[in-house]
Image (cartoon, one colour):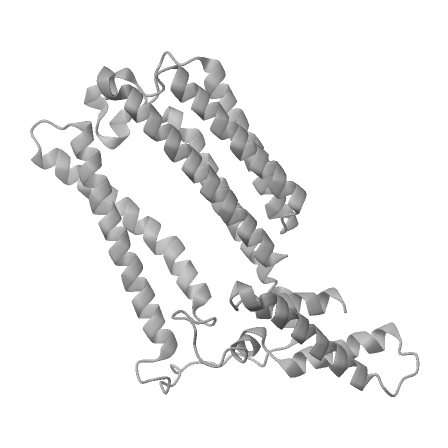
Length: 322
């Protein structure tokens, strides 16, 4: 079968549980092969264009991959269905960051305005606690609203809202809906944004978050930290950005590229661990001598937890999309 069938099958199983994808993919491919052979049965030696035309007819007969994926579940095994999933992800990616930014700004302003003597620990504690609560509430509200809308409040009998109906599905739509490529491109863009934010951390003044009175508005980073450490930090981020740009351009992520990313992530974690355990990285005015070592150890643990979790998530996604 051609790449067209591969894309079609990928679009179908992309909406199904991971454990059942392999069997269902094999079943769909076998069905497509049988249907194509039936159409070509009258030809002793079908030409390439005849095979391609028969394949297109079969795929259009099977219909929209999203609708076909629903036929492989006897009953809804999900709260957010395939049709609403893109909207759900879009809402989480845009609404949650907006809620986080608004919550942080609101809590910082209120804390500064209502506290005679602002302390960094109290400010961070109140801001982080309130922001996490706001994010959990927003996540719950988005999930419930879209989930109920997907199922229909009247048990599935809700009619569609008035408006123009979409045209009948055809193979040309499939070519524009390469879900793997779109997902990889979206993840690459988000990762690039995250890398840029990480690169800016050593340059952010404390006055930007209203704690500049603690160290005269200098950065959060120890001014005595050697330039080599900063250059190394930015060097690792640059290499990570190059990998994401390659993913963005190719709309794919090969095993070799993923292995390179893993090596860079681990090397970056080792680099940060050495930096944190051999010298004070945070500005001395923002911490006390008694708690500096504890903060460094906690930071190192957090770094390795994030790195390990990221590798597990990356390889699970790669295995699911092979």
